[in-house]
Length: 299
Image (cartoon, rainbow, N blue to C red; front, side, top):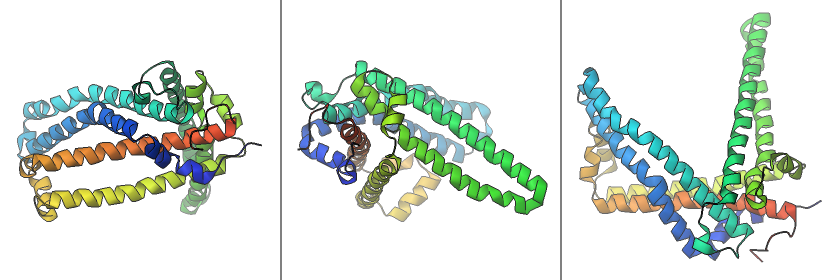
C-alpha cells in the first residue's frame, strides 16, 4: 500500500515557498489586490458605521441605513473577490507541486483544472452541510429523549455523543481532503475516488492538518506580536484600544499610512502562506498516495 511522509507533508508548503520565492511573492500580490483590498475597504466602512452607531445616529433609522448601505453593497464584491483569489492561489499551489514544469504566469491562471476544483469544493461543502445537519438533529433528538426519560441527568448523554460525532466528522473530513487536489490534477469529479484513496490514512492526514495548523498558529502569534510592535510606534496599545471603542474611524487618522501599509503587506504574506501550506500539504499527500504519476518536486 502506498504511503506518504507526515513530516514531508507538513513542511511541503515551506519547501514550496523556498523553491518558488518569486512565484510566492506574485501570489501574495494577487491575494493582496484581489482578496484583501475589498476586505480593507469593508473594514474602513465598518469603522465608519461603528462611529455612526456610537454617535447616537442609530436612533435615526434613515441615518443607520445610510451608514450600513456601503458595507452591504460591498459584500457581493468581497465574496466574488474571495472566491477568485482562493481559486487562483490554491490552483497555483497545486500546480506548483504537481506540475512544476507548467510555470506560465508563475502558476497563476483560471482554467479547466480550477473549474473542476471549484465544483468539487462546492460538492464537498454540500456533503459536509448535510452531514452536520444530520449530526445536529441526532444530538437534539437523543438529548431530548434522554431528558424526557431521566430528566436533567439524561441530558448528560449529549456530551460524550457530541465528542463521538465530532470525531466521526473529522474522520470524514480527512477521508474527503484529497478530493480538491485530485479533481484539479485529473480534471474531473473525484470524490468517490478520494474516499477510496484515503482508506486507512485518515489518522495520518488528520495529523498532517493538525501539524500545519500548529505551524500557522505559531506564525500568527508571532505576526500579531510584530503587528502590535509596529502600531505601538505610533501610539500606545492601550490608547489604540480606547480609540477603537470610542472612535474606530479615528484609527486611520492616528496611525501613519506606513503602518497600515506594513500591516497590509504582512497580512497578505501570511494569508498567502497559509493557503500555500494547506494546499501544498494536500498535494504532497495526493502525490504520495497516487504514486509516481507526477513529477518529483522536492527530490
